[in-house]
Length: 461
Ligand SMILES: [Zn+2]
Ligand SMILES: [Zn+2]
Image (cartoon, rainbow, N blue to C red; front, side, top):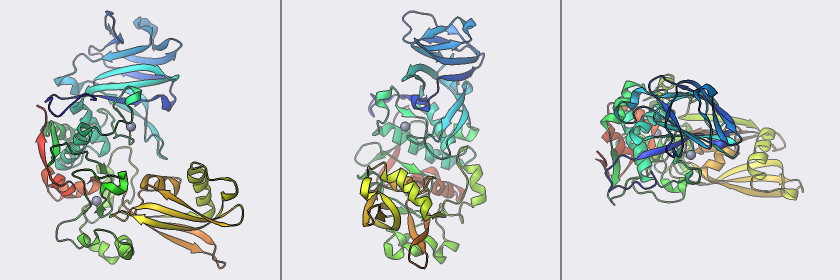
């Protein structure tokens, strides 16, 4: 992936980190189908690839990784490769079942799931833990992304729009979070979700095959570094407030038809925030990601298998002051090294001081009484850290208003955040794109709604 260029005209291969050393696993259990898989030491150094099938446990050993049971005659090596009989066309039918893979790494909903992985598997010992890398052609990889990010039962045009967006982001390749670890992308929300062929459906397969090689090309000739998030909440955020820089092709737009009342909320100003979040207009709004277009009860079958279901378009989170103080303490004050006499004793106020065009907070000032009895202020910047610092469960988004209930003495009692959307809100709105597909917009129309000054073009055969 690292040396792929737009001019090469070839389908790139991707290396995906599935079991990471940070997961702390010293062994991983695999079920290998009896269809001609083999295992070889990597690099092979002239050694034959030995047939392997059935239940295999890869365990950290002193000299590297031991493959058990030993009666396969495999033994221990510093790095193993498990190779399917064919990587190319019929790879869709073949996958290895890997047990106990972490999904939602670091989030409150982290869980372990089984995954069916096509392509090559590479297993090594790194920092005392197992590293399992899945190496496969990008088109096969995308089948595992689009049916993990959204459910495989979604309308075909939503899956196609999701696929072209994910492919564009991959090919633009501007993020290099894992280069030093020997793989291109991890399998989780840190990069984009990938769960192999675990949830692959016929329409997931068609969405990838029918858009093979297609990416969004900006007028400036580059592939669009296309992002996406679950629900914008009504207005798609511009890239600046999220990443601190312009990204060609991404822009702020109301997530609604051209003549919609919602178009008037771009940008969501402080003066209109209340109306945007809780106004009467919501009852009949035509915002693509609203429950009027995608009913909340239907979302469960459209979302990815590990997503929690709930109401994302508008939400309320209420936290007693003492509880929020303890969250702020561990997630903001300790992390940013504010301690000693300045340390938080009593939270007095939370004020959003800067917002993006979708109303997402990008700076929040915490007003508090310190242990020295004096009033202090501290500022949390960046939508990600705001969401992290203000809730044990990681807030759905930073597009919220703050309501503080106070006791008779004016002390904060309960802090209520009333918010909109799920995720950073920039680029393609996944639930909005689903709403558009349900209203029979095709995937070109969906992509042209969320991205500007671009065309969709096939970049390899
Ligand atoms: Zn990652
Ligand atoms: Zn939306």
